[in-house]
Length: 193
Image (cartoon, rainbow, N blue to C red; front, side, top):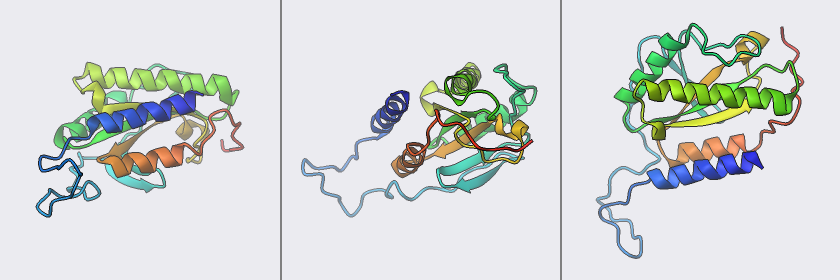
């Protein structure tokens, strides 16, 4: 139920962020001189020590250092300030972009509700940190995923934040389509160290 509510909230966010074209007609006819379609994006500014990783759910802004949590911790790790400064610079320079702040856990412990709820608190703390630093809360979408997305080789690396870049409706659809296939209640079979 929470997953459906989350997806519904994301869709409302996308609809609310869409701007009405200046040249629209009552029949929604596309006029030849309209601006570039939403599927094409401008070049992205990347802060120093960052990169973009392509994934099936979208483009991930890779910060260096990464934000990695200690086991069962929700307090912001020591690397938070440096990494989040990179995210803030990214958002300030790319005013057309938003981010989805994913919060993840390792698979030690019970997937649901324990690890999922841990990721909920991490996501809320991450968004609060960014908004306290002046980021518009409408530009950050929380996405707690618990242990549902084990992409890294160690348990330590699994306890992380990921920053998914959203520039247009297509990015949002791609993300929602991928995430809707995940089950935060499912115990992960990941066995890394």
